[in-house]
Length: 378
Image (cartoon, rainbow, N blue to C red; front, side, top):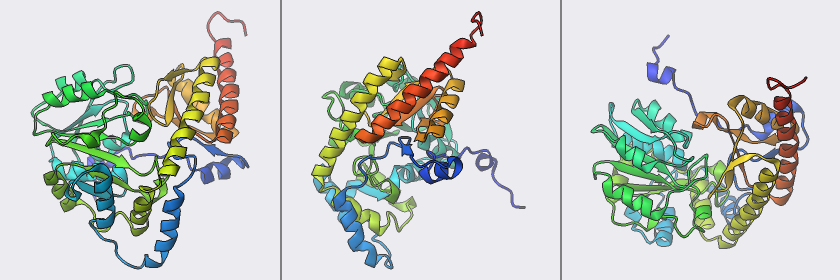
């Protein structure tokens, strides 16, 4: 038997939201609504779908390793030089390349507790030291992160909005933070949900910054354009960082379908408008209903809401009760919030179904819990 390195043997891998097909097999359900993975409830951009259809006859060919056409389309949209952009199979893959290319064993990756689990897994699987600072009011504690910097800190990961809490830090807070970070530390600004947060005038749009030589902005096509299944993300950074990432990146990714879909999606403004409107309508209904039921929730700037259950055990039971009813939500203990349940926006019909299930199951479990409190008659 071969010897597996201990840091791999003990690694807790990323566990995705429960697939619809798996739940259907387990529970024999005919109606399933999945609001667990922050996917676009409208599906994929129609322009992206058409581009994929046209590209199917070219799948026998290797792709352009530099994603030339997609990179140039992004550069034009973001007003950047193509040399400042790299594309990969989702932000998760890019995080792995950043850790691999910009750190060495013994270096520290500094971030927060209660943020995107992908940074935890990528740091640990490359045998780097992960340092986590507690959240403050369910958001990044930028002052606390600065205090945790050591001579071994090489990367700081920030998610804005944060996943799974939906909170943001402001432009002034971010700029103050960057002014205090030394230039030898790479700051990753993960903006997977920037489209939803941009309505807030205080939100810092990372792609607009040109004055930081140690800032990398990462984004995805999964949420805005509904391309989660094709795995497509990109990073914007100084040219020397991008050159480094190309040295460690797998050569033939993103795949040809993802590249063509991304190019087409960037031109689908109507789909983006519909996505934003659907999200706003769904989350407005959810927030109102959750407040009515009495479920604690974290104010969000993303396409999801973090619900705070009375305890971790309550969250486990609530998640299971929803699954039995055909509603897939996400218990985010692995992200660092043991009592948290994350639910993303849905279509009008999906939102209606979710609110009915949540109202029933939360009330039932809450009454059941109170019935068994000390001093209560059974």
